Structures are given as structure tokens and as C-alpha cells.
Length: 484
Image 1 (cartoon, rainbow, N blue to C red):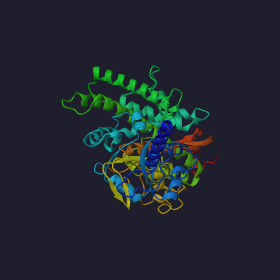
Image 2: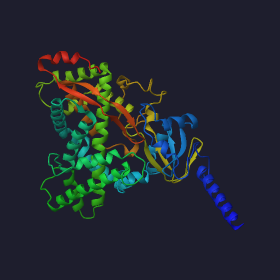
Image 3: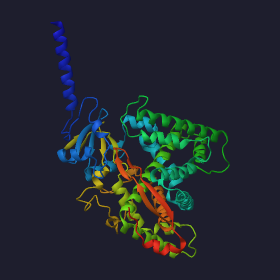
């Protein structure tokens, strides 16, 4: 009899717990949706990769069933997902007052507890200004020659090979450039393998958070640990033997750490360095790879891009001189092409925030402490805003001025956390495209399948053959189109 009572109490307790899990308490009306299985929530469905260029199936299925705002649970955390442009805009505009930046605990463990995405208020603004000092427009005006030189050297090397895997090749190119500007990193030194640790980190970045040896997530954490160890050693060496003049971001950090009463710590500086290295090369290389694949599939777009860059060369007094900031700013169609590329790429399809207090919006209540995920793909592929949204059409941006995020375009984030590396990314893409279409042609060899995850998009195995244009045939090459 006693055993039956205990069993009954256990069953009642579990039943009540499951009920509370599926029906969270709220002072108002929660958005519709499902909280999934206890503890797991809908994590397994959320982390499932897909090869579609459309809105991720996890999101699309729930949009159709519940509407543009719905609730779910991922890795044990209640989350409201927003595909509503108005709510997204409200979230970004209320940063620091109603919402604050937030990412799941697993992301914080990966990127560091004091990474720039997890900091708020004055500290965030302080770090943002530090980054802009290195990668803002004024610094980029001086850096543009170096960006072009890096692209030219890389393309020349690739043209001597039978083929290159474009994602890997562009990632290496951008990492070497960024690491040089940040920490004077020399990839030619055999004793240093910083990028190899980042590669291990990236391969397990978007995986189920199970920290067990052999899992992708464990390899990711180990990659971060090794990379951070190397960065810490470099920073300590620089602090022990500082340079007389600032030549890279490390020098700037060392000077800040020396200041009396500084709010910067070595731990914050190292987490910042790690995030900058990751974000600068991984996301940009993905965008460039996807851009070249789109050009390969759209000869008319390639033709207009070639014509724009040919005109730039023809207007120069010296055709062999480097790109100027004025020329860069004149690349009207190139910017349309970049906007359309990142709209379709949706490289970061989830932007997280946390509610600082209870919020009511369009009849729904979001409780204090709940997470909110803004879903850019649903905005970028909205047929009400973009005609034939899955079609690649750079001309749709003709005459459109973008000076930041809007309700219908948030490829670089939004609000006060609009990506500080946006200008750097656009410079790298535009300058690389200029060097490519004016001096080279290319032939896709194989691959190019797109594998999407909730966090990043990976163009899978896109191999191309890069061929230098013969000087005598340069005029005719401009009119040629690339076919598979």
C-alpha cells in the first residue's frame, strides 16, 4: 500500500511538472506554440540542418501553424520567435530598456562569458568604439590598398592551382589579413597554427551542446581553448615588450590596459579578440563564396558587374594604380549585388535578445526573463516585401539607400548592436570582386550545395578553377559569360 502511494505521488508530480512545462505561467496571453519535450524542448528539430534556400523548415512550419510570433523551447530555455517586422523593429529600438542582448548558455561558453555580445551598457559602447577605431570608415580608407593587395596575391596563387575550394581559400585569405591587422599574425611561421584551432572551433559551432569527447561540440570547445591559449600568450608577450608605435589592435589594447582606472581587463580583451577573428573571416568568406556561386549561375548579373568595374579602370589615368576610396564608393551595382547576396545568404539567421520586463505586443505577453529570437530569413524572404523572394535579383535594390538596418533588411543586425564590421565586410567583398572580374575568369568544377543550420550557412565543397585573363583577349573576356 505504501509503495502504491509513493508511486501515485511520483506520477502526480511528474504529470504536474510536464503540464507546467507545456503551459508556462504568464500574466497575460502567451504567443501560440509548443514547448516540446521536457528538458529538450524542440532542440533536436531546431538544430537539424537543411539544404533549402528558403526559410528554415523549423521556422516556416511554425509560422504556417501559429503565425508570425510563436513560442518554443530550445536547450531548456523558453523562447519567443519573431518573424514579424514590426516586432523585430521594436526589439532593436528598445535595446537596453526593454530588451538586452542574450545568447544561450552554450553560445556563451563557446564565445566566452565576457564576449562583446554578452556585455551591455557603457562597456559595450566602449568596446564598440575600440573596434571602430580599427575597422571604421576612416581606418578603412587607409586599409583599402592592403585589402586589394591581399586579394590580388591570393587570386594569383589560386590561378596557379588546378582548382581551389573557394570557402576554404577565401577564409584563409581573410583570416591572414584580419589577424595581421589585429595581432600582427604571420601565417608563414610554422610554429603558429592559430587558424587550425579556429577551424576546429567552427566545425562544431552549430551542433547539439553535448560536451563529450568525440562530439563536434567538444571539439569546438577544445578549439576555442587552444586558440585562447595562443592569444593569451601573444598578448602577454606584447605587454612584456610593447612597441614604440601602434601597429595593430594588440598595441591599442596594451595601451588601454596601461591606463589608470581602465575598465578593460585582459579577459575581456582576449574574448573580444577571439570574436573579432571569428566574425571577420568566417562570415565574410561565407558571403564571398555564396556571391561567386550566384555569379556563376547568373551570367547577366556578372556581365553588368564586369561592365561597372571595367568603367572604373577606363577612367583611371594609370590602369595599374590601386583602388581608391572614391572608386569604391562609386560601385553602385556592386553594392546592389552585395545587398542581394547577403539578403539571400542569411548567414546569421537568428538574433537573440532577453526581455528585461514583461512586454505586451499585438495581444501577446512575453514574460520577464524570456528570450526572444529575431528571425531575419523570414523578413528577407517575405513575399509581401520582396517580389519572388527566392530569386536572385540585384536590380531590386536600384535606387534604395541603406544606411543601417530597416524593418525589412537586417543582414547586419539592427539597433545599437548593428554590426560594427559591416563596412569592413563590404570593402573586402567589393575589392575582391573588383580584382576577380577585371583580371580573372573562373569555372565551377564541382560542389556548391548549401547546408544551412540555425546559426550559419555553409556552402559545401564549392571548387572552382581560377584563370588569369590574357591581356590580348581582355576586351572580349568582358563580354564572355560563365557557364557550368
